[in-house]
Length: 90
Image (cartoon, rainbow, N blue to C red; front, side):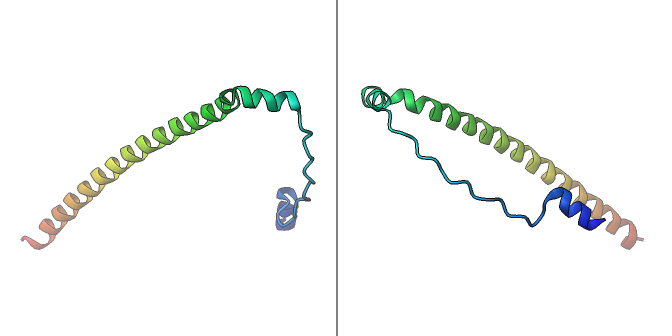
């Protein structure tokens, strides 16, 4: 059963490295880059802004979870104090 699962997931098998193909130099594209390099960076800038937006959203989610954990910790401390008072203050 485990062997079938390993075969299904292909665990332990190495992927064959594909040889990278050389991209031929396009003179027109090179001249476009020299004349207006910004158009080539626009796609990268969009990707970086998307990543930045995602990281900001994750950061806000982490802050919210941290606040919830602090609240739960405070409640547990209060519960611990109540139990202590019930057991030892007779």
